[in-house]
Image (tube, rainbow, N blue to C red; front, side):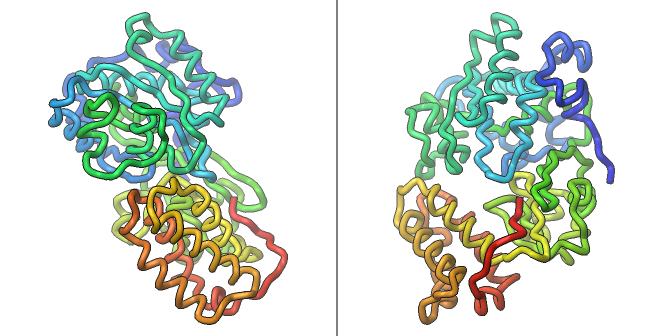
Length: 393
């Protein structure tokens, strides 16, 4: 496997946050933003927060909406995905790359203020980012602000984060308008994941091939944050986190809004957002988690569905009632007490919920469920209660 240190180059990660002086000595001063959007397009950089949308296209959409005043840059450091650790590590160790990317976005888009949103439970990352901002110039400090965001799964969704920054309410909003049209203070708002912004900082300095930050869970409680070249074999990344192909039954790819993929199919997949989408799966939040042969996909899926039902923003019936009903059915199957026709009803509910929510939270949840029913249908049909072991993550 080709492990690289583009974003994570510099002092040992265990040494904590890199100072501004060391950062400038290592990568140079903040470059000019002229022509940056074209460079982003040539690099092929896609957002690293989950949706995988082309960054250059997103930035151009901000430039095309000028009616609400100067745009706002909103750096998304919430990392609400329970299995992800990459964003918090990046902010805690390389905070100035994130700030560089945010200030470059401000220059390229002729934006006004820069907001850096960090979930309330990411204390180390928040402290590092606050200290880094205090090292920046007075001019940069005047336009930038760190804000705490609710430590909830839905809070990192772009409209939820913009809504929170604008009103203090961290739930997704009905669409349209989207934040790039009308967000914070009614202005076009760029909501960009912190890893994406860190890549911007390197691309502006001449990097041409963005790497990938991954959180790889190899089983037995072991996890690693890895930086790899795009196209790296999925199995190689998991092996670096202690996984064994022979002991792997399946892989949760992308996190809780991702998909279950059988290990026999997953191991040789290329870690490339475009190629994965062509195969009907997604890298999502950059999570790879092994389910070992001792693990139970029914128990794991039931646990995830209960978590996602609990993270509903309770804005619509399909999410609030639908996900609770689905989680209840999964738990009854897990406990060996399914009601008559439970599995067929579960499949029907999953189809009925999709596309009917006020936001995409129920879509992500039933997408994960659909992949579980597709890969592990017989296990759901014949499940018997047991003591769980072999949990992912």
